[in-house]
Amino acid sequence: MTTTFDLAVVGGGIAGLAHAHAAARLGKRVVVIDREPQLTGASVRGYGLNLLTGQQRGISWQRARRSREILLEIAHDSGIAVEPRGMMTVALRPEGLGLCESFQATEMGEGCQMLTAAAARKRLPALKGDDVLGALWSPHELRYDPRAFAAAFARWLGEAHKVQFMRGVHVRSVFPSRIDSSAGPVRAETVIVCPGEELLTLFAHRIAHYRLTRCRVQMLRLAPGTRLRLPYAVQSDLGLLACPGFADLPEARDLAVRLSSERHELAPPTVRMLAVQNTDRTVTVGDSRLTAPAPDAFVPSTGEGHILDEFDQLFDVPERTVIERWTGVHLVADRPLIIDQPGGSLRLVMVTGSFGASAAFAIAEDVVADLFGSVTAGAAR
Image 1 (tube, one colour):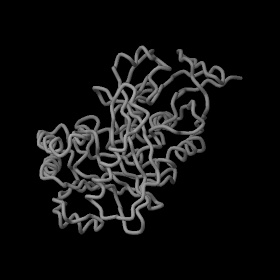
Image 2: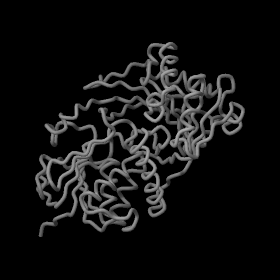
Image 3: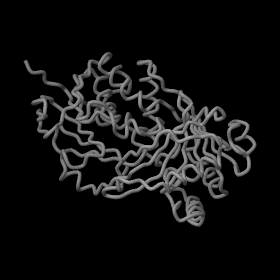
Image 4: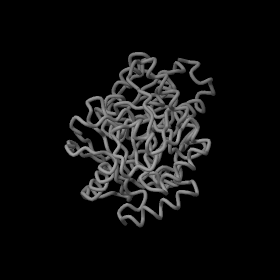
């Protein structure tokens, strides 16, 4: 007898898993279908940060706050390691310091604190003292190992919520109540498609309407030797213009002018410097970005050089060594979120920009509530 699921989720990245979780909490029978045998996309190629600071003002920031709550609930229920570490944004430029001060004065700066240069160095001894003008401290950011989290989360969804997984399965087409796949037909009353960066396989004509393009993100992993200790994420003001919560403030114009005058290659938002230390003490550092319909597969070394130059301006780690290099891809559009309705029981969900994982859990909660009826968050755990 063929099982008919309440929900089939096409796409097994963080966005897809978040939708499976939201539906499973309601007691729905859920299947997740993904064409890869294991996760290889943006869900495992990022920093492993749930970022609140820097989210676009309004609904994106609110969703990031709700996603943080859900992620902490998941960590509590599953035992998956998620740590509330926080983040320090270090100002190396007067214009960056002014932008941090303006951000802290908004509602988005709730719980954040401006630090003098001396206070920043006291809180984070790894900082070099020469160029630091001050810092913005945020207690909100959560940290997890991106390479381990998604697999552990999926495993827990299967064990605790009976979510079924079909991996290495290609979905050819989606119809109301039926999915045609390389493993045969799958019956589901409701379907949510989370295609990630794939724009041509399912509902290509609908996706084309949104004029999406791709952004290639270059990142590094460093072996820093024995000297560096980063108890939380650290970014410099170089990348603030890539963060809508900062970039949309009037004071961002001054930083844009400053960065453009420093070096043409640093014209925002091409390069940022954000570093997080992993449990094995290696440091994930990024990133440089190239936005194009089809970003070149060959990555110039200049982006890596700019990232490391900024890293060296913050930290004195002469023995650091690059041990891994990789690129990821996220989508760019004129809006942070696309929720399209190809049919009454079908949804196409695409999160654009680099903060998708930070808002995915709240987005999933909203989409599932719309499909299955509104519920009180957390009531069906």
